Image (cartoon, rainbow over all chains, first blue to last red; front, side, top):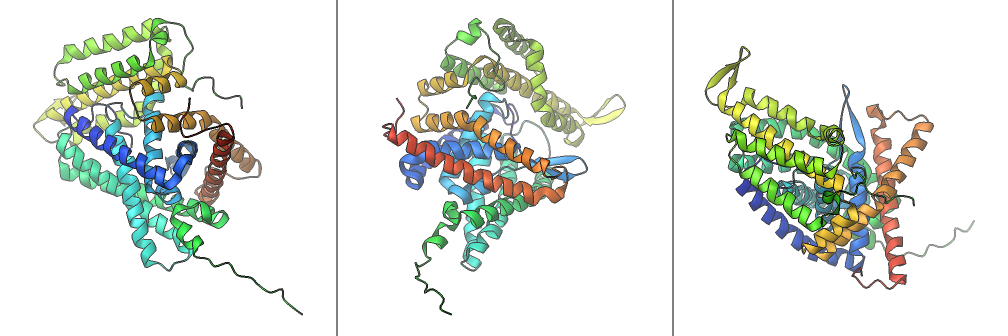
Length: 229
Length: 221
């Protein structure tokens, strides 16, 4: 889904670059609030994890495979600001070291996958989590729904950018239908994987999951008496 | 940890392109690509000139041209899309090899392919001639926020450690009979990712404590 150079015209690329820079600047300040002076090593390791996670290919069938985008996953695991920051760094590294996604489209990619992907996913996650019972077992389904929605939302924002600054004369309605249809399918895969990953982390270390932390903290310390027989 | 000798795309060399300061190379890449993207796509000779610029930089760097060309496969999914554009685009139709395609779509496909290919080639040239640590120094010189550069540094430094961790997990699962090609392995793969997250997070905590014990105050020297 990495947008290459020349896909959107120069003005749109510059504007999304400014939006991305602003978003990353805010994310930097907020991430310090989420992680304090641990920010650099923790965010670096989480970014490396996201990168490695994107390398795992999930078999889809018929010989094709897809991989995780990770926006909603990162937002639920480490919080939306740190998640957006980590994804932005991943995209920066991919653009500079792997030629994956154009340098001039970096702002677009960060805006779409970093900011929109993380925050759309996290917002839906919070909404669903508020409806579901307050248990750690409802964190994973909520994260799955967040992931399901985040992918088509990012695709819709991309279509909007394409309508404004696209360089190909394709009917916007057709692009929207194609993008939404295709990315809903991708979103289902993303949702299953995100849900399963979050469930496995919640089962082992719920205290590490940002989206489950408030549930862990409310557990009262209880002193149980030894069973007398 | 034997990692850290350049990344996968780096091609060791001693040319003028390798020696050039990284911040100048990054600036040149961004300026060049902005120019390419802003160029109207029907200025055909200009794109020839751009191609000449990229190829001469590649030749100057003495990175084998085939080395760059082979790594351009990253562009393939995008090429497929660009080739579809003439068929789905609107506008008057024209005949190419007996198939009716959209005329502006054809022009758009050419523009997408030309600009995208130039972008991939130019980025690959930067990646092939610049070591990761130099890129970090260059980004710091360009006044990228210090924290972003630090995060990038940690990511690059531990990327091979984390991916090797994942590789070991995959090997041990395969040796126990998991078939990664079957969709039935989704839950297993997802639990692997969960375990990888916990391991990476805990590694981050250990790294942070190790840095604190060596006097880290929030800034790298």
